[in-house]
Image (tube, rainbow, N blue to C red):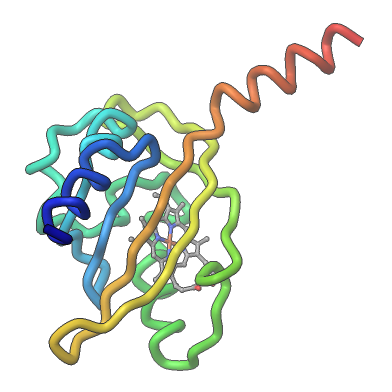
Length: 131
Ligand code: HEM
């Protein structure tokens, strides 16, 4: 059925997919996210999504969400942005972030799709140096 297909898509996706509630608390995560950030999947659930980012984003992220919910001004939703993520070992990496919003049972949720840009950036750098 539909639910099993959705589950299989989430499990097999190359990109990291994370959903949060309206306060930034992680409610679902896929295996690609676990591989990318270096935590087991169950370590994400119930954490604030800001644990996956370095400063200044880490301290500011609750405010970003609150600001969006208060004003409706979209800075990333429907636009996307290149930002910096932080792995479990403390190293940081470039990533493209796409965010969308949905409502379920009268509550707002957000889905983030994260594409790791580290190898693309390394290739670009190598090409520049070869010129
Ligand atoms: C907004 C950074 C992950 C949900 C933002 C903004 C930044 C940011 C810079 C815009 C601030 C502004 O200009 O006002 C990051 C970084 C992440 C990350 C560095 C690295 C892990 C996520 C994920 C989700 C998410 C995984 C969702 C599951 C949101 C929401 C907003 C937001 C809902 C407000 C809406 C908007 O600005 O359009 N984030 N974010 N973020 N982020 Fe994140």
